[in-house]
Image 1: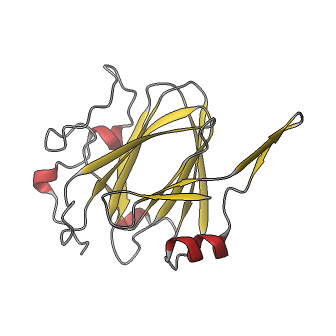
Image 2: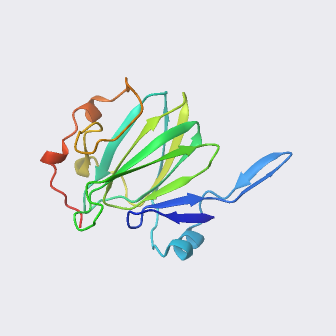
Length: 182
């Protein structure tokens, strides 16, 4: 596994070693001991989630607040997404900035998103399957989201007509947000 650090503290791109032959391919998508050794992070994942979405669906920008904040390890099983995160940690130099990366079934990249980030993605292919591990259980009472198209972030999504949930259309603006993350 190759781990690439980003300019955001602890936001990591993971590229697994893929072994291919005439039968197909194999790769280890997660190994807790190796992840801890290679990243220096002591994270346990307690819940796995998976979504299937049509092209042009945007899901995000979601997060959970403390004490149930979540770190996530995200990847695409089938299809492709433009994955986007926003740093909500007010003591970081990257506070309020976004990062985006294309994750596909072909490139097999994964993104480790530490606690304190809003997370979302644009689906680039029909029937995309998106999978993610979470470091904390889902809590409806502590979930929140920021507006996906807030001008404060100037995120270039690359779609004119996204398909959105009511929740994502009604999310709060950055100007209304009080960060609980340090």
